Length: 105
Image 1 (cartoon, helix red, strand yellow):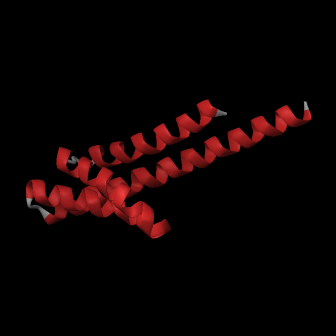
Image 2 (cartoon, rainbow, N blue to C red):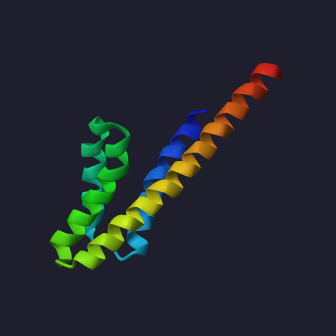
């Protein structure tokens, strides 16, 4: 179970980074996404979703001064976040299946 938990968190983190990297994100954008994730946590679901998106977009805007690219990086980060969330839900179902199997076996 612990392995599935770590795997889910790792997939979620890597998916967000890959989403940003595939759109050509700078290091500042990646740091912005990370900081946006931390800042967004206390704001609930909206903060968790919008924090990385806005952080990556602001980081990219500061790095390259290109609003179009900053928007692309923000949306890429959001797409990576959504893919990571789906993977994390898959890991949660695997954990549930493992627990049910252990309970009834």
